[in-house]
Structures are given as C-alpha cells and as structure tokens.
Image 1 (cartoon, rainbow, N blue to C red):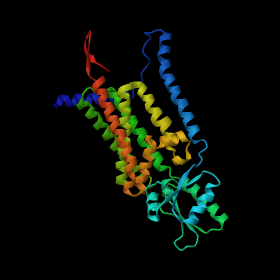
Image 2 (tube, rainbow, N blue to C red):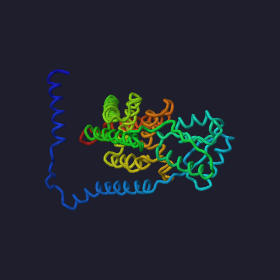
Image 3 (spheres, one colour):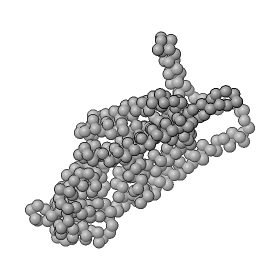
Image 4 (cartoon, rainbow, N blue to C red):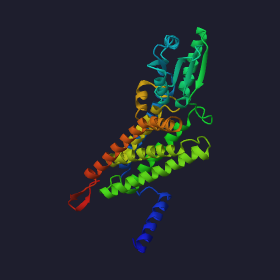
Amino acid sequence: MDQDGRVSGRRIVAREITDAFRPRREMPAVVPLRQAIMTGIGPLLLALIVGVGFIAAFVIALHDPKPDDVPVAVVRGDQPAEALLAAVRGQGRQLEAIAFDDAAAADRALRRQDVYAVLATSTTGAGLTLTTASAAGPAATAVITGFVTVAARRAGTPLAVVDAVPVDPDDPRGVVPFYLALGLVIGGYFGGISLSLALGTVPRNLPRAALRIGGLALHAVLLSLGGTLIVGPGADIWHQNLAGLFGAGALLAFTAALFASAVQAWLARVGTTLIILVVVVLGNPGSGGIYPAEFLPGFFRGIHDWDLPGLGSDLVRSVVYFPAGTAGWPAGKLAIWCVGSVVLLLGAMLVLGRPVRSPGGWRRAH
C-alpha cells in the first residue's frame, strides 16, 4: 500500500471513531407521523419480548433453587455407605447414589465432575468418609454434606468429611467461573454484532469472510487475555493454570462472536434479538449461575449442557481446578458451536452475499 493509501486508511478509521461518539438528531420529517410510529413499533416489540423473557426466565429458573438428584458416588457392596445414602433418599430426592465397581472408578468420577462427592467406609473401618469436590459446585457439596451429616448423626455413625478439590478461598461461593464466562460470552457476541454493524452483516466473498473470522479471533484472544489478567494477577484470585484459562477463554469468546456473526448474517437486526434470547435470556439462567444444573427446573437443566454461559462455566472450572482431560467435553461442545457458526456464515455469504442483477445495474443481494 502506498503512502496516500495509508493516510486515507487512517483518516477512515479516525472518522469512524469520531462518528461513533457523535450524537445524531432524528432525520427531518419526510414521512407522516403515523408511518414513523408504525416503523418504531417493530423494534419496541422486539425489545418488549426480550425484557419480558429475561424477567420470566430468571424468575422461573432461580427464584427457588432446590437440589434434585445431586449425584453422590458409592462403591457397590459398600453396605454402610449404601445404607446411609438409601436412608437419605428415603427422606426425599435431593441426593442420588451412583454406584461404581471400585474406589478408583468412583474417584475418577469425582475428578471428572460426574459426581460431587464420594461416600465410602473409612479405610480404618471406623465410620464413613465423605470426599467432596467443592470446586465443582460449593452449593452442591454443601447440600450433600448437610444431608449426609444429619443422616450419619441419626445412625450413630462417625463421619469424616474431606474436600479433595477445594474451591479457592478467595472465591468461596464459586462465582468467579460463572462471571468470567459470562463476561467472555457477552464481550464475544458484542464483538460479533459490532463488526456486523460496521462492515455489513454478510461478507461478500471468501477472503472477506476469512478476514472477518480472523478479526473475531483476535478480538477473542485480547478479551480472554484481559479476563485472565483480571482473575489472575489483577484480583489475585487464581494463580494456577492461567495459560490454560487463557486458551479456554479465547475459545469461549470466539464461539460467542462467531455465533453472533452467523445469526446476523441471515437475520440482520432481528438476529440481534435472537442472539440475546438464546445467549442471555435463556443462557444465563440455564447456566445456573452459582448453582449447579441439579438445582434448576427440568427445562433449564437441559439447557445447561449446551448453552454458552453454562459450557463456559464448566470449562473454566475444569481448566482451573481439575485434571486436563476433564475440559475436553465442554471444549468439544464449544467447537461444535464454532463449526456450525462458520458453516452458517459461509452459507449466508454464498446465498445472500453474491451480486444480483437489477433494472438499475448490479447490486448486492443483501
């Protein structure tokens, strides 16, 4: 690029930045008032749907979170442990015993976050040991510990509680994984929407699509770097596995940005509403926030396994607290979101981005 081209490029960037901060008046009245009102009804209706949906989703999902079938591991044939969990189950559906063939299998399930605790006869033969992983969900392990402790006291059985994977003492309620994931998702999809508003929702050819995807990737990397620095040296909460956390955050933010771009490529402004409905209105309460999926009503419990905030929270917890292999499942689901979003974006480019012939000459289809 020559010197004039570089100067022109800088001027365009400066003008775009300046215009972004410049207030704009309404256009002079060129259409009747009635038509202007009718034009504004559509956006307001979409905003109404989003607002009412947001209230309904959060109130229904989180107004009274109750544990239901919170999984606790037990080894088959360990009669004292099985009997105690059976007694707890007889009082309600709060806990569910998951049987494993041996202690090693039960421990692996705890490390994979398939269960929140393991109840077993103590190696000394005196009483029971409840091994928890509070990093997987402090609310869940607190409920398990409470019910098992009461049942053991009633049965006159000594009980020792050991937290094998403790939550960080600087985050005792386990809120940081959720809020970090939420920030990455919001920042990601806002980046995708902003780029679509600036460039147009549909890339016109493959090089432009690749450039757009590359820009979203760079945005995701920088966003994840900022989040990692905040929860690491900034707020001094986590000190372990920060490189893995950075990679996980970049994947999450990139997924959200790609999804936003793909939806807007097909649905334009209506796509923005759909993005908010899927990611925020349903995704946030579906993630559970500080509550595990077992505390949510049935519909939202199912959402948790695939919504972006829920997957992001699971991925962050896995990377920070648990062995490397446990992050594979949430990361794989995010990869599916990425691939699907790229396919949708490229499909929009092929269908809507090609020029069509009009009476006045060539123009873009969208």
